Image 1 (cartoon, helix red, strand yellow):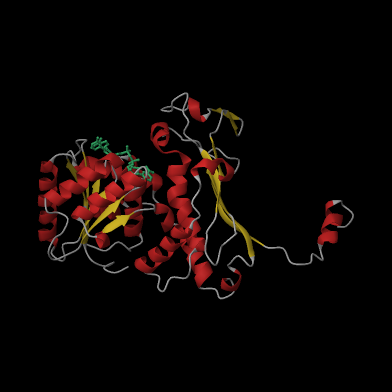
Image 2 (cartoon, rainbow, N blue to C red; image 1 turned 135 degrees about the horizontal axis):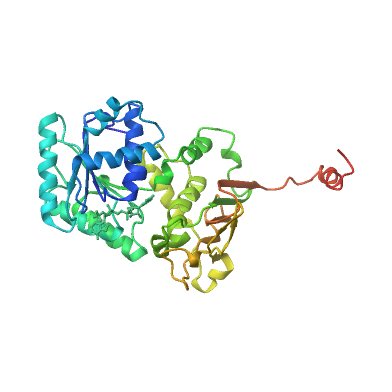
Length: 381
Ligand SMILES: NC(=O)c1ccc[n+]([C@@H]2O[C@H](COP(=O)([O-])OP(=O)(O)OC[C@H]3O[C@@H](n4cnc5c(N)ncnc54)[C@H](OP(=O)(O)O)[C@@H]3O)[C@@H](O)[C@H]2O)c1
């Protein structure tokens, strides 16, 4: 990644929330502890809750202790990291917040010297993304001389096509495309990145990676846990919005796309885009033929009684939100025509698994068919 060793300031909107506590700051800490975070850096958390810098640092230490991959080796090392954490309280709907953030950024940048590189991370409820973008634009924070400015937008990126387009329009009215990072944390997982290495760094797979040899592709992301107290969030999304339209379609694209010219963002995005364009549209009148949705009922996990989805806190008793979805998709192009891609995901399933299974076509003549039957019948050992 270019600029990876330059100083930067990261402003997190929604810094009193769960994502910052459980994921963002623990991940930043792990980068720091592994000596891969460029220095000097500053992390400025902001949300409406009143908190001092000290209280914010204490809360982040708790999050790091509980959730970070790398442990805190000593108070001294933590103090050095925590010295770069700041908190600015304010309402993202109020213009004053942006004035204060700007002042704080300038103070930090003046004190440390070097480039004025800034990242704004939207980790708030999605309904606030528009206001944050507008606030940054109005305060002239979207671009700055002498450094780069980026904005990171958490999922969900809109609720449907229209709202996603509206959010995109809003972003583009203030930022340029190269400044915008639409985050799908799933893509950062090593196994996901390895799909590309597996496909494009090994000469042996490419010749069989097509309809002549592949009978079907199955992509499964199964969880054993339920909504675990996040019922009101899940009610608004469901498995289709939470998992399929983002993570699983990305996995499908990585499996199905043509080799990009380089591993840079642009060429990879272009190849994924071609897969999405080639996806056979589902006839609204025939959705039932290719997809199904359902939700988990009450039952037992390891001998303990657990509620059904409709009995979870924050969920309507007559909710129609799905916690399981399965579908068959087809890609109408030269490589994949006629090969079904099965996607399935759900909560409270028997086994936690994320896997992609490629089933190859049968050989033209099965010489072991007889032997397999004998083994099954216990005739041979
Ligand atoms: N948690 C995860 O593991 C996870 C994973 C993937 C994506 N995400 C996404 O990340 C975003 C944040 O999730 P989260 O779990 O951190 O949510 P959260 O725990 O509810 O935190 C939301 C944050 O936004 C602020 N906020 C809430 N309502 C507000 C309002 N009306 N006006 C101004 N500020 C408001 C809250 O702080 P104040 O009340 O102090 O202002 C809080 O800091 C969401 O878009 C979510 O979909 C979360």
